[in-house]
Image 1 (tube, rainbow, N blue to C red):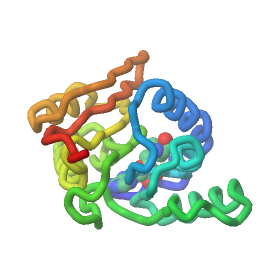
Image 2: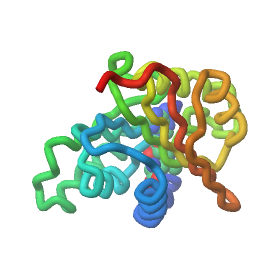
Image 3: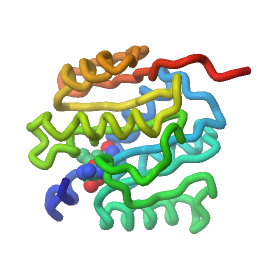
Length: 192
Ligand SMILES: C[S@@+](CC[C@H](N)C(=O)[O-])C[C@H]1O[C@@H](n2cnc3c(N)ncnc32)[C@H](O)[C@@H]1O
């Protein structure tokens, strides 16, 4: 687990707006996230997706997190600009490592991660550390909660891990490089 170097960060952030627009379009059209959900985003970068989501989905709470303090700072500045210095109170940005999430067990209805899960692996290509990130996601997600992610690496291995841990893939969209998945954690339905 390491921060991106400044050059990688520059290029990742350069394309963040268009990437978040594509992610948002997919979620909007395809993924059943109820208003009032408590949401956690991992590797949220510039928080471009978070800003769109909070506008469109009205979550009760949306916590955008990133390992890299530079990204947290960039996200806070971008949100201050976008919301005229007054970001919605339900949207917070903080530093967090997806390998050791600083959140209580079963505290989120939805966990989101866009092109971020493979960053749990320092060289990105070694699947070895990724199950720990998935276990952390599983720990903080409530029963029947949704994991919503887009990935370019370890696509089969991540889905296999989720299947082995009782997740049902409810949405799956593939383009030539990116796979978009919404997977539901098992468990009894929430009481009405
Ligand atoms: C490819 S960028 C994607 C950023 C954003 N989701 C987007 O689509 O623009 C991956 C992000 O994951 C963050 N990251 C890397 N390792 C992490 C970790 N262990 N925990 C949380 N975030 C991490 C990076 O700092 C970076 O902002």
